[in-house]
Image 1 (cartoon, protein in one colour):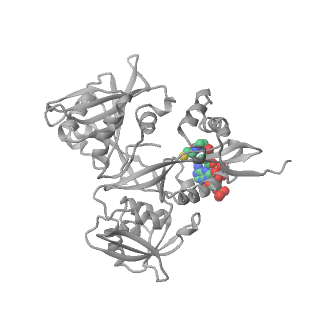
Image 2 (cartoon, protein in one colour):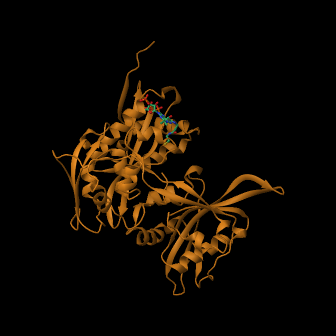
Length: 410
Ligand SMILES: CC(C)(COP(=O)(O)OP(=O)(O)OC[C@H]1O[C@@H](n2cnc3c(N)ncnc32)[C@H](O)[C@@H]1OP(=O)(O)O)[C@@H](O)C(=O)NCCC(=O)NCCS
């Protein structure tokens, strides 16, 4: 039997064809000719790390450069999508090596935090990613829903892919002060928001803009109908999936929902909303709406020092504490850090002092995003506490004015 010798490196331009094949097959698809050209056009080769066996890629991890917004600040963000491996090469540690290498690369490239969506928590948790955001999944039969407030004045206007700049202006006005949205470049709008990504570029979504009485654009919704796979009285059933919903005021919020209710053929509407979205409270009968937990991304603090330096501070009083971080996959994060937070922002420096608390780098992610408080993590045993008063200081240092949320999927 031939001794296996695997090379790990970023891909070159000539590897795109094999990478497109690998990604299609790993996700049970079939490679299409146009995928290679699409990838070449949109992705730089050095964003994709791969394991090569005899010159052929067999596993891959792509890290797209993105930017995450938090209370008006921008932090470079390593957006991981996709992660793949041919079945014959799985459970041999190739993906693990690529994930660890991707952490080194993100650190070198100045991306102190990273995120990914996955159904495989147990895999990514080993390398430091942790659940640190969530959505609230709403679904309801539009025929049964009535609102408590009257329809506003104003109207909807259809838009197309080429209106992405109009949508982006509304989006940025809405998300800039919030916590967790990504900055969207043109390609992101076109391929991940305005097209159903799973349709491989075939299916454009519907877009409407809300125009208020004075003629100003005040919100938009991007949505698509999709078959549920069921039939009723012989009719194939459809549901409406809301991909993106932004309202800058109450009129736009109510008006855009009214528009969605006009879709009489749909037996269901699905939307993964902000965790604080008041939609249910606006309904005559709240029990018409089924509310479930919707998954957000897993987040990874790649570089403690860089991530803390770019994090805005929203606490009430200044804080100073020490925390021991353990991080097998990114050893530069290991050790005791002295964190300070106050009106001037936040910073972290390595120290020889004793640690007030200890945690794995995983749990720094939900603290950092404001998804969990120090007290909650400590109560569940996810933080080891040596100085109890430090918990309130940590919570104060990582306070947020809004829970973490993104409407994007990746
Ligand atoms: C998910 C996938 C990338 C994992 O690849 P892999 O080659 O098995 O990964 P590795 O061998 O490097 O795994 C590293 C470690 O994680 C473990 N692991 C792998 N997949 C896991 C999973 N789904 N759940 C829990 N642990 C997992 C491995 O057993 C290994 O543990 P070990 O170090 O104790 O042996 C691969 O199964 C795949 O391509 N699946 C189809 C596409 C997909 O789901 N991509 C990811 C979407 S987020």
